[in-house]
Amino acid sequence: MNRRPHAPVRITVDLVILTIRADRLHVLLVERDNEPHQGALALPGGFVRPDEALEDAARRELAEETALDGGRMHLEQLNAYGAPDRDPRGRIITVAYLAIAPSLPTPVAGSDARAARWVPVEEIEGLAFDHDQILADGLERARSKLESTTLATAFCADTFTIGELRRVYEVVWGIALDPRNFNRKVTSTDGFVLPTGETRSQDTGRPAALYRRGPATTLYPAVLRERLNSAHA
Amino acid sequence: MNRRPHAPVRITVDLVILTIRADRLHVLLVERDNEPHQGALALPGGFVRPDEALEDAARRELAEETALDGGRMHLEQLNAYGAPDRDPRGRIITVAYLAIAPSLPTPVAGSDARAARWVPVEEIEGLAFDHDQILADGLERARSKLESTTLATAFCADTFTIGELRRVYEVVWGIALDPRNFNRKVTSTDGFVLPTGETRSQDTGRPAALYRRGPATTLYPAVLRERLNSAHA
DNA sequence: GCAATAGTGTCTTTCAGACAGTATGAC
DNA sequence: GTCATACTGTCTGAAAGACACTATTGC
Image 1: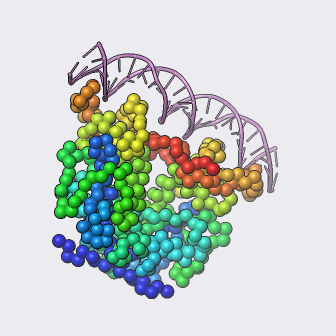
Image 2: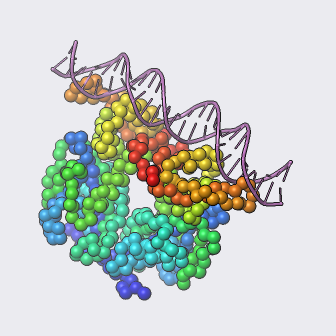
Image 3: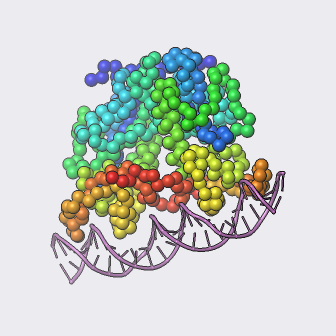
């Protein structure tokens, strides 16, 4: 029935690495310096080594690209993409991963031989291969998981203010949230954030209390996004 | 840097096919008749053909295994599993899919050369390869998506009663739900179910109104499971 | 003083959860 | 009639959303 039932293919991992810079959601992109799609922007990634687990390959690429301690960063598998014609070099299946990086005090640059740079997500179009689709899936995953998990804290440094956490939600969702209701919601959700007892002065206004991540991973009740559900005829 | 950067691997799709039979959640398993794991139970699956998209391969296997019209069944990608030692035959990466089949009036049996059979999920242990993990991930995905999507209707026939839909939730979640509150919730959620105007008599009791799937795919507000969140220290 | 942000309190509405009571069939 | 299930209505408490108000800083 099968012509070549054990058709050999090659496997890559591609990374959707998200961070927030200057109140905008950015993704790390590389400029391709080889064919195919030479010169086009693409998600960072690379081939999986023969005896390497998929997540190990993703974490290796993550460390190479961001020059950060990838081991402490949030990393989760997104999806596998395997359309037969997705890469002109042959059958290449990619397993995409979503990574969340904290806002970096020092801008990361030139960490790798390749020219990697942070690009605001709303300015992105026409990525190489099917990377537009992968990016869209990564964004949707991140937006969705903000609701029901503590993923938002992965965008923050070790300690953060409630205002910074709120800005994560606002930037990733692209909507404004009521600061007062958000404050009540976050501090009353058991295990979401823990007060450190310290405060931090801003440019202006009252200094904000500092928090660190709590032990919770899922949120109940969830932080709700909006009522734009598809529930109508 | 890489020893063999383009290491060839083989790709399979494995299927977690869920259905409800006699008020119990079942998954379709096959008995392996080849090494490795000969004689052990495993998820149905097979190699992806050279020019076949991943989802096409999954739908093909689904149709082969269930002898049903796989085209109308719910099918979604679950995860990729690629531990280097997950298959003793070499580097084999599997992309798992979750399929939901309606309760079948006629028991499906002997649809394929292989001995496939429905097994209640609570009786399953010791599947071949890493299929215990894949099954666990599939169950968790299904349980989670019952909350926020209309996935539950995929377990039902074209027309169904609210009681049948409630039994889907109860069986998949393994908890009891209040029939009266469930009824109010489902019928007041816009686009979830549409009344057909017809009724169906049961063995006993008042005949129930029949509904069909509505246009909604996501539910807002969600149908909540329970408060056993991990939000405590 | 003003501007800006942090944080508290209060009211309203929505909705989950509990449960009384009625409706309609089979026997 | 009894029994079983379908369905409606009502009450309560939890939590989201709106928003007035106070607190603490830099200027």
